[in-house]
Length: 536
Image (tube, rainbow, N blue to C red):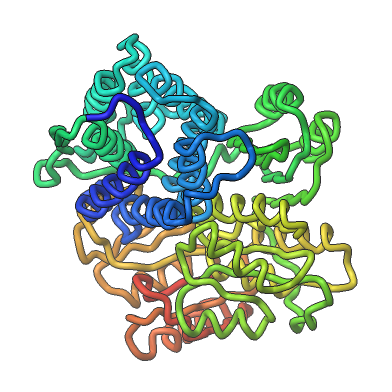
């Protein structure tokens, strides 16, 4: 039993928490309620904490001359490792929780009950600060409940406070279906919250020597068909504005209110005076001007959501000195396409550190990153912030599919200013509508109706639009639906599991039904999705 949390205990906590996440990795992945094969919260949490443990493996005997205690240095290493290894939204949020924890305890002479309670409060603040409009029934609710229970224990007894926090976190996890209708319909608890409960249970085990009772999620066997909607923000706003901002905490607090009044999907995350600002608005000028008033905005990117024809593709330009592009993608064919455009390719679902390594490896002073997945955008933004500290100017174009990245790379022009080139790439990506065809991995109730495992799903802009039994029929139907809204160019990327001749048959259908539309088809080799397609 421990009366205080020392450096050795921090290392045991990280190792024990990682082991618990590894044991329950598949279970947490299964808590995904969307019927396509992308339920990877458990995997992302494991990879994030693996990076934290690797950072803790560094020599802890030599402390930096910054006034931090040995346990404070260990917590700093753990939080820093989690940040660099963060994967997906769940991993990024966990890294923010650990950062708040480390900030509160780094200089504390000893970590007893009240210090642990204060650290959990700071961790909660750090997690909520990253989200403009927090949603209850998520990881945020669970960490907040743990912090309230720790404070309510009102004790210097480390063991009592740790038990109180872990116990209330488990109860908060059980309440998440009551708070979030999508979880209730699916009959599951929040995946990120489940992961946090395992980490808090591991902390209890370290400080008490006892194995706490694990909270059990709702059994999948009795769950109802799920309805899940991916967050895309309100369609009332036409532009996505992103920039880095050098500003004080007070100025950013005012900026939050101003941008919140201008639009939605507001997220502001910062560290050491540098903030990453993201918002959806109609008035781009007002959003940028608000940043100018608050401090010094830079790396400004603007994405137009309106569907319109993209600029005509031009031959890829030679890479200009000092500029580079880093693209996240999986599939040998897709990697070859991006390589031909002069881009550095990073495999899907990278960590912050892996993206940062790729950025540094380009040896360029100005780099554009194309994440190609909504779940990788927060990781890309974290890598961009880290690169800024190394003197590299990085802009993230929020592409959600490889076909959008191809459209963006096609309009690069070395004769333009870097900032103008990034805006042109963002506009081209935004003007490329995208779809994915895959097989349902689970039973669910989608906006297109109920589906069962094995059904063919056609997703347009991330939402299920068609459910079919035949792959080719579903592919041609989704092409027709997308071209019904206009378009001059269709790009097809065939996956590793696509049947032979799929692209040729889709091309023949387009030539018969849409004779004035050009078709470009490639062997992408991507897993899970027999066909990815874009319409410009």
